[in-house]
Amino acid sequence: MPGWNLKNGELQKCKMSEDEYWSLFNFVFSDACMKRNTYKFGLIKSIMDNLFNCAQDGYGSYRLSYNAIFEKFTVNYWNLVLKYHLKQMRSDGRTEVSKIESILLAASEENDLIKTLDFNSLSETDRSNVVNQVSVACRKNVVGALYNDMEGKLYGFDLKRNGIMLAERAYEFMLKYKTELEKLNYYAWAKFMEKINEDDVLVKVLDKLELSTPKRNDLSVYREVLYKKFKECNCFYCGKKLNFSNRGVHVDHFIPWSYVKDDKLWNFVLSCQKCNERKNNKIPSEKYLEIMLKRNEQMKDIVDEFVNVEFKNYDSSQFMSLWKYAQLSGLKPYVQENS
Ligand SMILES: [Zn+2]
Figure 1 (cartoon, rainbow, N blue to C red):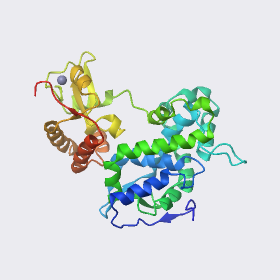
Figure 2 (figure 1 turned 45 degrees about the horizontal axis):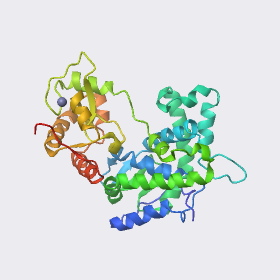
Figure 3 (figure 1 turned 90 degrees about the vertical axis):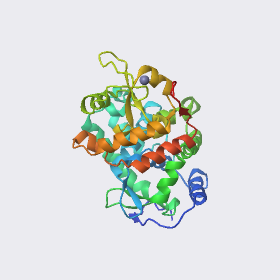
Figure 4 (figure 1 turned 90 degrees about the horizontal axis):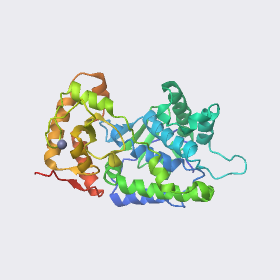
């Protein structure tokens, strides 16, 4: 049974070992798993990029909304299809492009300029319009299919409800092996695209997949919030007083963006330029983790709409796991010069 037309599927809550999860994921990455297009890779990536937007539901699973999933999904495909012109479907003799590609092409049809823009520079209405169309198409075409390939052990779903329910163990597994799964997923995705694209667009295809999740450049809203609302006036790492009148104040991802792939207040600190450059893609030591955990505990309880949204699914034990797993993934520790 292909599963693509399933309307719902119950989450199989069995005790899965890590080996069993590896086996399921490796099956999906393999040629043995049927794929006419790249949606399954896209869905896996969107789930993994959303691990920090999941809410524990108290029944041994994590809820992740369709909106969160398909917003990331849309951004990825926007770049792959419009910016890099990478085809995502094997031609079936009747149509050349997949449903998602045709939605994106139609959205950019009237305005060629749009194709060169980041998805996030579209107006909010245009964005949510496109995300809605993508969400409708994908809920129909891929949520059930991947559910089936994963034998219901990754997530359960009901198309009438808003989102999927990730198994707790699957969630832990994805958090722990995020980097490895991401790479295997990219590799299988690239291999699939090699078969259906012309050589000239395949240049640096793995880079293009990585760049399909754009890094936000403007983090000034976080600088303002940390400075004005939380009076963070000193460098988080060296303690030096920060000079807000020049551009020397950096907004630093405590756990590097390369691992989290998301921008959330609970992961931001202010730092001086020197520390930010030295720290770069490294993980701060345990001493800093403790300061961070304390800070976040205080932050999450204040009543403020922006802060509350940012902290919606924050959980201190999850933050600790993240810190630990990011190191397992190969990121080096950051050691302060004078400590
Ligand atoms: Zn510093």
